[in-house]
Length: 437
Image 1 (cartoon, rainbow, N blue to C red):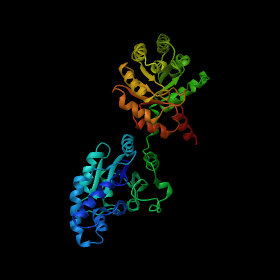
Image 2 (cartoon, one colour):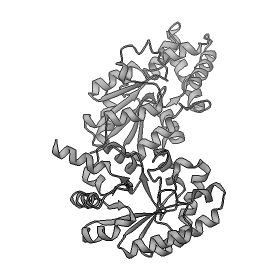
Image 3 (cartoon, rainbow, N blue to C red):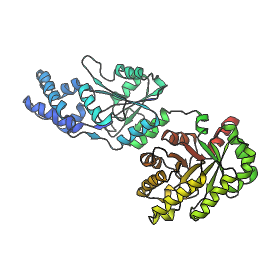
Image 4 (cartoon, one colour):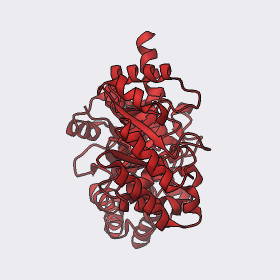
C-alpha cells in the first residue's frame, strides 16, 4: 500500500506567474493586442492553457488561435526565466520523500512545460509529473489523477491532493480524496472562502504536518519497538525498577535496555541473554578524563555490557581541541572491542558548524553511532539535527535520537528520517497503556 501526495504545480509548488505574464504580453504584442496587467494574468490562471488564452483574448476572439500559438512558442522557451520554488517547498518535498510518501504532480499546464520544469526542479523528489496533452480533459475532471493513483496502486483513502484554488478542491472532491489548499498561491483568502479553515495552509512547514495528520504512514508498533533502547537513567532508579525495565524490554522485544553502570552486572544476570544491556559512560556531562572513561568502559564490558553510550567532552569542542576529542573516542572504541559504541554529542549545546565537525570526527574515530542527546541537558533530539547527521556522517555510522521522544509519531518520524535507534522509555509505556485500555 502506497501513501500518495499529489500536488498542483503553478501557485502551489512553483511561482510561475511572472513567466506566464511576460510570455502572454509578448504574444499579445505580436498580435496587435493590448497588454494585460499582472493581476489580470493571475485571474486567467487555473483552468488550463485553452481557458487561459480564451480569457486573454476575450475582446478579440478571432485571434485566439494565433495568440495561443505565439504564447506557446514563447513560453516553451522561457518557462523558467523567473520561475522559482515557493518558500519551504524544496525541503517539504525532500522530507516527504524521505518519510516514505510517493509524490506526484497533476497540472492543467501543457505537458511539455510540465516535463521541462519537472526535470529542472523535481526529478530528485517527485516520482511522476503529468500535464495536459492533446485530447486530455483538464481539472477538475479527475481522469489524470485517477491514472496517477492507478500507477501507484493507491486507494482513495491513501491519497491527498494539494492545490491553491477552488478548481483543486473540486478535483479532489470529484476523485473522493482528501485535500489541502495553500494560501500562498494565486487566489486570495476571499476567493478561497469556500474552503474549510482547517484545510487552508499558510506555510510549507505546516503543510508537512497536516499531510502526516490527514494521510499518515503508520509503522507497525513491533517494528518501532525493535529500534528502542528502553531507558531508565534517573538518579533514583532502583534495582527492582531495572528488573521491571528488563521484563518489559523482553516482552516487547526492544533493541536493548539502557541503564546506569552500577546495575549492569545484575541486569546481565537477570536478562540471561534475552535482551542486550546498554550503559552510559561519562554521563551526563562528559568531562571525566579519558583515562576514567576508558576504565568505566572496560569495567562495564567486564560486567556484561553489550553496548556503550559515551558522552563527549563538550569543553574540547568549544575550545576546538578536536584532536583530543578524536583520541578519546578512539580510545574508548578500542576499549569496547567488538561491542557497540554510541557517541553522545549533546546537540542542544552546539552550533551547526560544531555538529558538522563532530559528524566527521565520530566517523573518523570509528564509532558505531552518533547520538543526539543525554536527555539531561537543555533539550533533546530534533529532526533538523538528524537530517544534518545524515548529510555528514560516514556510511558506517548509524544514528540514535534521544531526549523528548514521547509519542509513537515522534518515534516513527525519527525512524523515517533514518535513525536506527531511539533512546526512550515512553514507547513501551504507550504500548502497555493501549493494551490495558
